[in-house]
Amino acid sequence: MTTAERELDANTNYDWNRIQESGKDAELLFGPGYTGLANLGNSCYMASIMQVMFSIHPFISRYFEKQSLKAAFATAPADPTVDLNMQLTKLAHGLLSGKYSAPAKEGQEGIRSRMFKSVITANHPEFSSMRQQDVLEFFLHLIDRVEKANPGDRELNPFSGFKFVVEERVQCPSGKVSYNKRSDNVLSLSIPLHEATNKEQLEAFNEKKAAMNLDGKEVSNEDIVRPRVPLEACLSSFSGPEEIPDFYSTALNSKTTVTKYAQFELYNLG
Image (cartoon, rainbow, N blue to C red; front, side, top):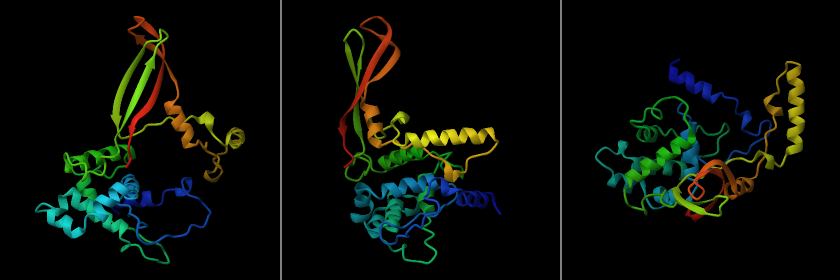
């Protein structure tokens, strides 16, 4: 068995009970939009991003509804295997057409997006390797590559509607206020664990875990209780007041504790 095969086997047999509904019967879905991506060896980070991208309108419209495989091939360079737009169109039709997703007794293996992976990871020291990668880093890499493939053309760039502007207002004890604006396409949210909706279950679990640790035992994956924090709480934490200590105020000419507020000036995911 090669190193790549060993990594694929280990990844395939990972304990997915941690993130799936273990012990419950799941209904297999087939048809357009329900095609899976085969694991190419530590490629879950790529598959998860691409499945999400091709579930939203900008990507569906750009690479599936408004572009056929024939049209993409006609506008591709001499070697279409290295053209990102061609490979994204090919991937879109593979995932969304339903041609590769039909009822089967043992489910579907999914399509193997080797050409797309080869193009999107080309010349990147990390993504071109077989090592596990960070999903967010790949998402940012995808944005960069797609924008470079469609320079200055908002209609052809499905990420053009992802950008938003955040306005940050900083107020010091003197009453003076400063404003700062930044554009981004990723909203980083902190998780206010104190807003968990299952606090009683968490307390009971922590007590049980502490008792088991004293006995030299470990809690099974099925018994682990994780905090459930609503998205609304995360968004409220983002826009709510945040105290920043040791902030140098030009109004006071000294360090002090200021309060920062954040709000969206422009938010467009269309």
